[in-house]
Length: 383
Image (cartoon, rainbow, N blue to C red):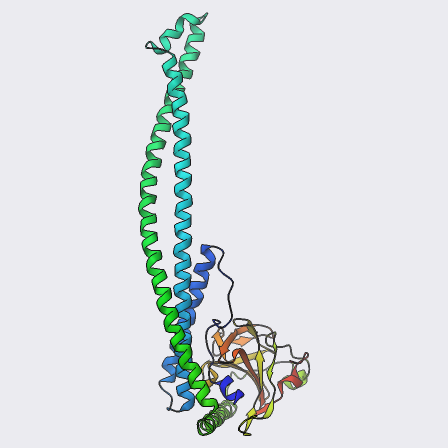
């Protein structure tokens, strides 16, 4: 049953893992971009799900994907609220800076006005008698003209600042209104998220206690496994002029492959006995517990022969390594490689997605459709 639940969702979100609060607007905007991409990925999976034959597994995936969608929307609403708060703070700081500069300019202007008033009604002519030569008077006159020009510049700057201050006042009022809307939206989506997660929890609990439905999930997973084998058989059977060839045979890399992503073993290769129903399930690869969104890399040179959403495996990439060997990467959050692309060992093909059991990567190695134990091929085993 654990394998069944782990396989039901190749989710696109990392929302089950707490994220650090954004520190600035650029981080918020970056995260909003990630959420937008995640929502697109979830919508693609929902659209693909509608084309599949109905069953317990499809029903569970639909509930899980909808919960993921609302979870993304809830985080998006929170981020927009944070964005509005930061904008309010930014505008408020700018408003305070403008107010401070206005005060400084006014103080400077007052000093100049007092000095000019001290010259008396004759202005600079009143100073003529105090200078020994006409040349001294001319120099002082130029200085006074410079001061008057600076006075006009300060007056113009004060007027400009006052206009800017009024504009900032309008901006902060609009930002406050937007903040109120975003806070209300965040509350609404949080309430919707709670309902969706309760629905998912109820469904999972019912599935755990219903042997008939649990066996139905196992039967559906078995059917999917057969369909995957048929796909690999078709790939092997197609005569291809552009078949992937490598100077280093994949068979010679046994025990030398790098891990596709850092993590720990959530479920190993082989048959597993369900502790309650005593039914047996077959894990055709490894289920790796990893960080959501972590990069997933090709374990060896290969050609991408499949890069799409595949039933309950979610977004999946299959690499052809030649000689009848394939590596499979399932439950991805997103796919960054395209069909027909040649990848070198270590190049990124996607990122770790989220299942109902948390962030997981499914990793398989097959030879002529037959599953191999991936740990035996890795330089460093998952434990």
